[in-house]
Structure formats: structure tokens, C-alpha cells
Amino acid sequence: MAMQSAAPRAKRILMVGAPGAGKGTQADLIAKQFGITHISSGDLLRRHIADGTTIGRTVETYVNKGELVPDAIIMDMLRKPVLKASETGGYVLDGFPRTVEQAEAAYRTAGSLGVGVQIAVHLDVPEDELIRRMLARARGADDTEDVIRHRIKVYDEKTRPLLDYYAQRELLIQVNGARPVAEVTWSIVVQLQRAFKRPAAPAPRDRAVA
Ligand code: AMP
Image 1: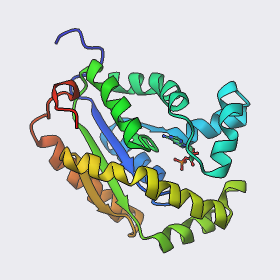
Image 2 (image 1 turned 60 degrees about the horizontal axis):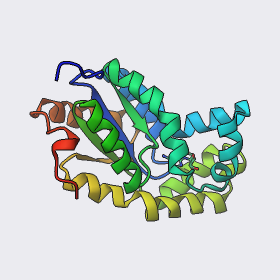
Image 3 (image 1 turned 120 degrees about the horizontal axis):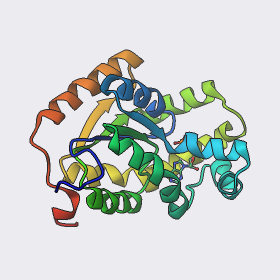
Image 4 (image 1 turned 180 degrees about the vertical axis):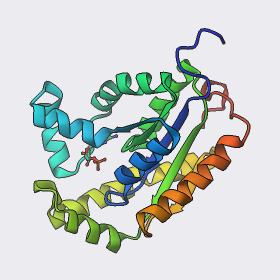
């Protein structure tokens, strides 16, 4: 269709990984490598909280406890930056989708935009390494060991099922994230370049919905 608002070959990369897996760091490096935009749902939420916006006041308790923020707020917050990035080459999304429900909602939106390839990257890191990294990072109130363990539990229960969701759609790249940063980036870039060369998958709306 000629009238689509998004570039037909926009690169849409989704980083999936437990808290502490290195999603933010890798998303930043991958976005630079491909000249696309890094969008982090967690960073956007933290900025809203710091600025004391209506969204910020609504989400503060969820974020501090490591609970997931309601989908409607997340979808609303991401709509504009995602649209803008789709028009300028694409994006690396870090922290979204966090549940199969969010992935399905994103799919519906993407379908109406007719945007190009989508690939999910799973940064796999063992739990003891995740806890070690997050304690070392100790960002503030949300980084007590109890909250860290809770965030990992939320990941296992709500986000991990996304891996099957994407694997069934042949969109999943698996990466061992427990290695030095540059090695992990290299491994992601090589696999993405290979994936981008494959013929484009059908637009989401043309696919059977599982
Ligand atoms: P992150 O920086 O990605 O670990 O996100 C920090 C916190 O923001 C999470 O623990 C959640 O409370 C919230 N959050 C970030 N992204 C999402 C999302 N896609 N859905 C729901 N909550 C989210």
C-alpha cells in the first residue's frame, strides 16, 4: 500500500530479558549500530515519575514495587515515540512487550501501520548473575534484594511466556547475555543482519492469530 505512514522496511527489534540482563545497554548499542531509535519503557516511566506528571503519579507505586504497570498506560505512553521511530527507520524497544497480552496489542497496532520486519532478541542470563548485577548497580529504593527477587519472579511468570510466543513465529534470536558487553553486542548484530536479509514476513494482520 502506498499510503502507509511507516517506512515499509522499518526495523523493529524487541529486547526480551530479565531485569539485570543488560537490555538497556545492548538496546543502546544495537540502535546506534543500525541507526535507529532506542525506546525504553522503564526509562520513560522513570522520567514521568521524576517529572511528577499524571502518569508518573499513577505508576510510581507499581514501579517501586517491581509490579507491572497497567497495559493501557504503557500503550498510551509508547504510541507516539513508537510511531515517530517507525517513520525514521525503526526502533529497539527495551522493556516492552512485557506480557503476551502486550505483544498481541502491539501486533494489532503494527498491523494497521503495515510496518516491516520484527525480531525479538532474548538476552539469556542465569538468575544468580542477574541478582549479582542488580545488587552491584543498586539504583535506589527499587533495588533491595527482596524487590530484585520479586522483579525476577514477575519476569518468570509474566514475561518468559513471550519467548514461546515469538519462537513459534520464528522471530526469536537467542543470545547468551552472561558474557562481556562487546561480545554480546557482536553476537546480536551478526544474528540480526542475517535475519534482516531473509524475505520479509507477512504483515501481522495477514497472519493466523494463535
Ligand atoms: P525496566 O527498566 O524495563 O526494568 O522497568 C522498570 C519498571 O517499569 C518495571 O519493573 C515495571 O514496573 C515498569 N515497566 C516497564 N516496562 C513495562 C511494561 N512494558 N509493562 C508494564 N510495566 C512496565
